[in-house]
Image (cartoon, rainbow over all chains, first blue to last red; front, side, top):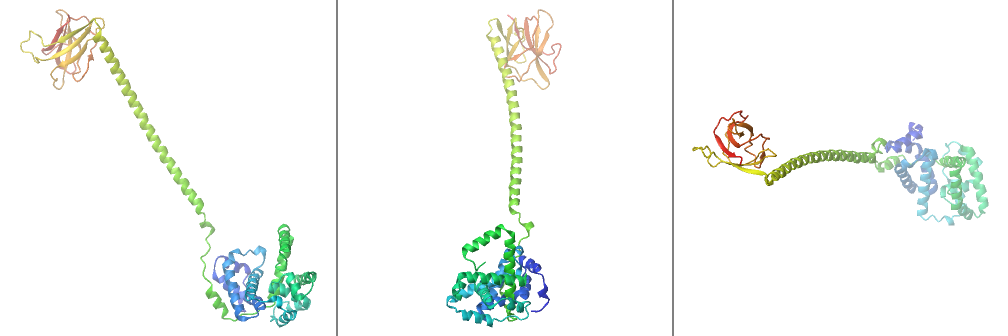
Length: 177
Length: 241
């Protein structure tokens, strides 16, 4: 995975993808498969399903490459959103009974999450986002919860969800912008 | 964005559409979130790449922008076809018009010719019906015992005022090649005066040139160009009574 393809520019990958050249998909896989698989696995917590969803994700990227618009977001964001939506759809399909999920389960999942220690900024991130903020981001971003569903699950007022989400996003913005 | 209620989501989208700064901010948040998501990077097992890529179907290369203008082309063809049809139509109509013009000219000429025939016929009829017109039967001379054509007969209408003899061949032998019948006028004992060549093929009356005083009309066979003096026997002759 750690080969020179990691340094290929997104614009080159996009150009290959848009001209229906499979090399583009191969380069994209080398560069972002770990990120996509990480998100998918984080959502599904199951290797077999995660691998299937990664395959679905790659197919969707391949089939929808002509719709990608770089002016609306970078390639990572676009592909991660595809991966995230595919994984959340799969999770719902398997009748994830998320309303029955307890707050303990959510925090446990968060603690157990296999975080790639080499990813830049993770330590800072983990230090700067408090546990409540992490849970909010986790539920909304990785599980596709709405704010009211988060409020229901965590048994906190929706106003608190909004303020924690706002604080969390601001932290993320500071960290990654 | 997904975390918002549908109403909130619509509001944010409306703002984003209206204010580019909001659009940019949304994009930054999304990218920050995807960076965050990246912190969970997890390498899939190495064989998975080949498994996945082997299931991806090849797609035909997208058509080049240059190769797309089929509609304009089609319109071009239709235009060309219409132009060709128009040219063909112009040529056809032009030819038809030329033909019609020629036909009109021919019909006008025929009409003029018929008008002349008609006028002549009317004139002839008037002359014939005129009570002062004499009808003279030209026949072989009675004193000729060996006439060349015993049955020959030509009718000559003669009006003293008009003085243009009108001839109708009733029976004359066909003249040999290079020969023509010639009309003569004879006054008393004077030598015969040439009075014009006769068109043997004419099927109707023929008007001869005006003549001076005359006692006898006679017809001989002469060279086609005419002769100042008669060189053959008289075929037919008739007295003005």
